[in-house]
Amino acid sequence: MKIKYQYIEDEGLVIQRYTGKCNHEDYLIYLKNITTEPWWNSTKKILTDFRSFDMIPCINNIKKVSEANNKYITIAYHNVQIVNAPRATAITHLFQHEVGDSQIIYDYCSTLEHAIQSLDINMDIDQIESIIQSL
Image (cartoon, rainbow, N blue to C red; front, side, top):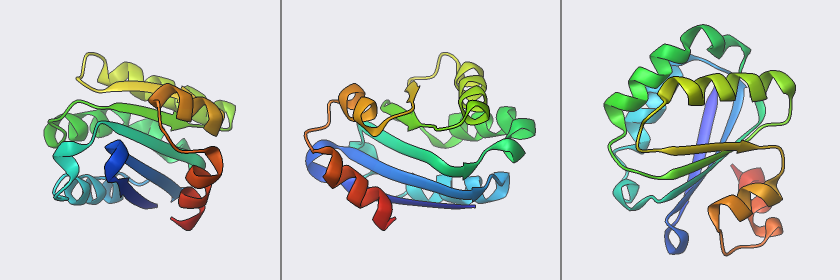
């Protein structure tokens, strides 16, 4: 599992791309790293690309992932997750249900256009896609 990200300061935006197969231990390392970035507390929006990510191994760890989020994430932000398969949609929905009343607003969608609109990002789709592909 790899999670690469880039911070866009003008937008308070993190663009992140997940690839490979879900692994809880890798996710914990990622959480520890991203939440110690100097810009982390200025984050207001996150665009998460799950289109090249196998979420099936995550299904048994949804509760653990939720608990890790609650432990490490102490800021409020809006996270839109892009999914492109029925199983990924279902797992994303289960995860969002598990985190429930957190201070994070979660949405999921199947298109980059919708993600950009939902997050009110002032960048065009080609710019965002270029960043995602570079991750």
